[in-house]
Structure formats: structure tokens, C-alpha cells
Image (tube, rainbow, N blue to C red):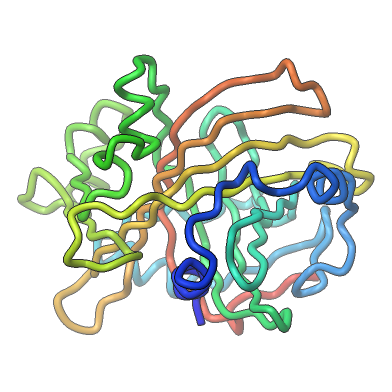
Length: 271
């Protein structure tokens, strides 16, 4: 069962749960944890070897995924994303650059701590919602915006942030936009409320450095080829920073767009 299925299953039983309902005691335990007893035996500093064949194949089919470079072979930060699901979600960061170079592995483990889903994610772009209307749209507060049935990513958006023409031609061909369909909820509904959670990230083994932020996100997906193609996910996440390195005065809001590809666990080695 993938995390989205677990989220929908628990949602039917418990109803809507806001991230702020996590108890302060739970948050304290999470924020103070060290990088021990994690799936795949991962720790900060662990060497990660991702088989690049699925990524190369996806790129050849027009994916916007960006492969890890030679310097992105170690886990530099680890986070737990607390969600109203039966299971746990982790992120192993290969790049935690706050300016937009983030790359991470996202793992979902079920209630029995068995790995059920693995995604490789690379940063596409970051948007700062400067108006109240923009913030409401990216939070899905008025029943529109984040959570709509589909999302169109426009070629001009990527041109404006510096993507080269060759990469854009490979992804868009003759189209002006790429259409992604919402990946959770009833596909017949025009709007489904986005997922809310709290991400707590540690940037060192002792847990002295890191951040905590509220995340409001929605996954969208598209097929890369008409037949037999891989699935590419577009993860749109509004992130409200609550604290950094324990400093609660560090506050900000931004929207990250991540491209993700499902991977088989056999294609990943953590040492």
C-alpha cells in the first residue's frame, strides 16, 4: 500500500486531521531524535548508490527529473514527515540546498515498518507566494488552487528560470504545457483538500541543526509515454518554516515544485 492509499484509508476512519494536532511532546521527541534505527540502515553520512538506468530511461521519455551529480552520493540530512497515515514517511536528503537544489529519497513504510514506496525527487523550482490570494491558492484554502483536479506546467515557466532549449524540447516536444492529474482522492472531484503534515529535519547526527516546518502538499502525475512508459510525479508543496536550528524567529513561506520518480528498492543501496 502506497502512502497515498494509507492516507485515504485513515482519512475515511478518522476524518480530517490537521498537522497542528500533533502533541507538543511528540514534536519534541521527533525534533530531538538522532539518525538511528532508520529504514535501510541509513544515517547522515551514509553513501547512497542509486541505479541510474530508470532515471536515464525516464529522461529519454521526456521526464524533467534531474539525476544526482557526483557530489550527491551521501545523505546530508534526514527528515520525518508526520502525516495522518498508518505508517511513516522519511526523506533522505542528498542535497538540502535551501536555494533550490534539493534532492532526496522519499520512503514510505507501513505500520509494520516495511518499505512500501520509494521515490527519487529532484527540485524543479521554488515560488514565493507574496499576496494573500497566492498564499490561499497554494494552501487550497478556498476550495481551489492546490488540490485542483489537474495542474498544467508551462514551457515558458521553465524557460523563465533558465532551463535550456534542448531539455525543454525533450520534455515538451511541440506542446506549450505538460498536464499532470491529481494523484489522490476521487478523480471525479474538481477539488480535493491537500495533505497536511509537519516535517522535522536533522542536519547532523546529534540533531543540533535542522528545521521544522508545516507542509501542505499535493502530488500530481503524468505518464511519460503512451504505452509502457514510466510515471512521473509533480509534488507541489507549500512549506511554512516554524524554526531553524531551534530558532523560532526563523519564519518564512515558500512553494517547492519537485519532480519524482518511483524506484524499486532493489535499485538503491545505502551503506
